[in-house]
Length: 193
Image (cartoon, rainbow, N blue to C red):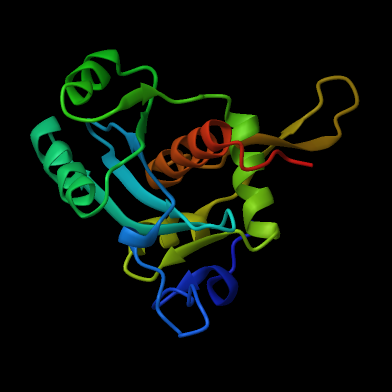
């Protein structure tokens, strides 16, 4: 994993100006949320703010088994009330949930290209353009538990990495992937180059 607690987890945000003012959700140039809906697995959401230099900061997480859309909507409304959400990007397989959230927020189906999303998150981590507030304990745990799967080539029997995590219970990481790819694509904040 490209994730490091020392490099990517913050107890508070870096300063945004010479006066030492901390970067706050309200100061973000752009604000996005990602949502992964769970039934027996946790429903997970993240709120990310993007500063003027294109760095992404995870300000908050929602993580609950058996959560309903009312609870998820209330969480989103809290963030939206503090600073307007540009977009909420959701698991595209959940059209009914997306249509319900659309009534209150600018909600869209996320880009579900797993390879692109995982590579984008890795790219941001490797270039120190993604940080996580230390209160997002479930997301931080998922980063620590994340392991790329490996398979054997049926012809050569060589072992190669896959983009499917081992024991995939990365609901928060999926929500992060949705928000990151949506933000990066919508705001033209860079590609993998």
